[in-house]
Image 1 (tube, rainbow, N blue to C red):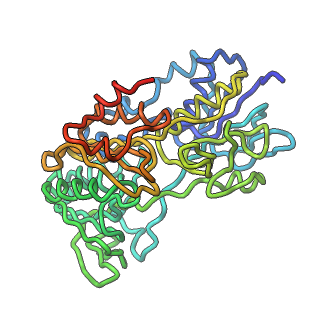
Image 2: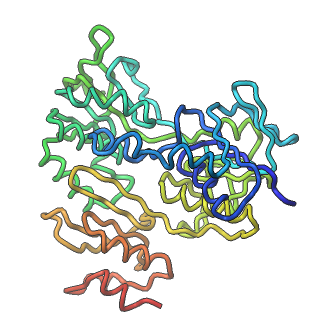
Image 3: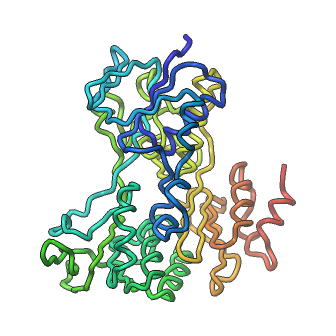
Length: 411
């Protein structure tokens, strides 16, 4: 059956990509892109780093200028989707408007896990998820003298580097025993710990925040659960995200840590697809187990895959996951998924902040983490996209270079 109307809920990276790719694929029907933020759809990754530093403008954040939506005949709706009527194929909006669809794409993303401690509502306490968050934070980070960051994940450390570059004293509180513990190897964690400490960042590992101290409604410090007190005129937290599932739950779609989709990103309703941070899909790089990935690459590639299916070119989603983070002078790029890794091989010179860590599981290469070695990252993506043949013994051989090995072993 021909699709006359596609409605997309969520105007982030994934939702925008579906709309843009549909037009690139030649789709001629109606496209409605619903986002609950004002303004044009924009990139989120720079919010916690380049945008805060003033290195890129608000205009540079935009996926496309305003005339793109007019020229491509994409209706951009600034409203909140509050219900999905699957029987009548309608999306009801907070304004009272209902939008009909032949096919619906759910790309609602995720929201910050809240900092559930006393005092978290005080002025000067921030999570970073939206442009509004970054706009409110930008002038404060230039003035802050004592900054506490809760969480040593990507977002927390990106902001810690920004705050340190602005001359603040920065303390990072982390429940784990090392930076980015859920995302990278111990070897890479160590490189980043040393680099941040060189920039003046102080780490407190195995420390949880007990409550935020306030004075006149503004933050003035934090106290850890162990009773340690730290001065703070600014607190930024990055302790994970929670997928925005309410719309799908109330619509009766299957849920398993995210909106459950099949290998082509269809939900339990054949008229509804889902993608990005909110969707749990069977990942061929994770033994076909359901996986919910929070990455720009995943949102973009899934958006393209859904658009192709909707114009009659269905295919299983098989894209290799990859991620990145920029922290100060360090650029970390990760290809593949390192869960279950049981051995590693290091390439490069960690003392000069150039390192690649090759992660193996049962002698099979499953992921490569590269800091300031972009050539290794590109080679890793090519190697991991096909059945890996590189062994730990080969990688550990004197003089081994990943780029050279990849070029010599192309099919």
